Length: 526
Image (tube, rainbow, N blue to C red; front, top):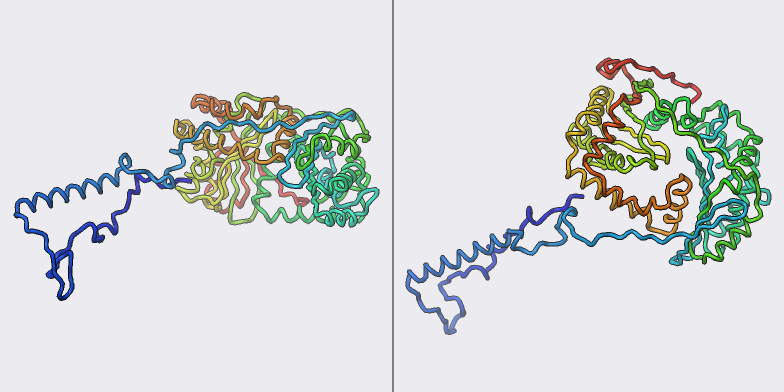
């Protein structure tokens, strides 16, 4: 984003020296009048001394004008050439509209926010279930349930009929399954809101799980698992998650065998267990009044009943011992990922660590990892860090994708940056840059009513305090250098959980250079 300042690029003099208005050129025919048969007027001759004096004055004036034009203090600065870091603007006041929160009698929580800019209605349901809730031996069940809920029809509509109705209304209905939550999203024209909500409610409450659609979804999932072996970057991050969350539900991954064991009865049971009103939060936004939105939701979901008790959330994962884990993959590149346990959002250290992560590797080309490993040394085409955070825990990792021969060098550099060079590199300039970037990008999470209601919903979903969003920018602004050094020493001083994926025969140095190595089995089952 660096701009070009007028300090470095003053007004150009090219052209002025060739402009006839700046210099008087004598000619044999005179200056003011020319042409055959016409009277020519000449200025009176001046004494040589006075002529020299005037020339010196004119020359001095020209030199002064040129120097003044090139001096920022005296020249008017072009606002288009000002560096973004030097822009001045009034303090931003963060005051997004607050969604209306309602709890239905059956325990379902609603967030409603009007937005009449476009004739659209958006409905988002978030269910507290995901991949980490897969039963042992049936890994992949949560994702398969979400997929076939969308593609497998309902009690009233066949699978093809669901698609036909949605297409006729130009509506979209999507289901996505994450680690801890499953989202069902509907977008429909306001004029079709009743029919759209009817289909949405059927998919959510009464999926049919048609047998042929289950078989198709299983085949596609198995093929996806097999294809993962050919994507070494995705494979590396999957294996890293399994190492970091070893013996924890968060480390579960679907295999060809586990998906193959899943039957229709498993999907029905999983849906009955988790898809019930008390375990669902919903956001309704768009071109609809609050009263009508509430009436519409009550019409389609008010009579829905189910188990009142919500599933107990899993405790925070236990810290794994650090060390190097090696996964053999015969490819000419390597993936190096080094991770540490990090503070959760409810921890006061979260804000300082958010800034620290930005400086280390998630802040783009100016971050330490990207600048040194990618830009300066050219050892990686993909490098950086990430900070994935939940309410009660977080995970920080530095990573780089490099050629096989530079694997050990890159691992050494990642360790040095995170544990040795970091404290030296921390200064007021980097701190100000990171805080400004984080605070300025924060507003882009609240560009629409849909985002605002979704943020409020997820804040309650994660159990965060009511003023979390309002005070986020203020708490980021309060971070000091001493806070960065403190959290760096607290969370990044131990041995990292490190995953190296690649072919050690091409590393050029022994893999155990940094200590004992845990050789991971290449899982033929995916």
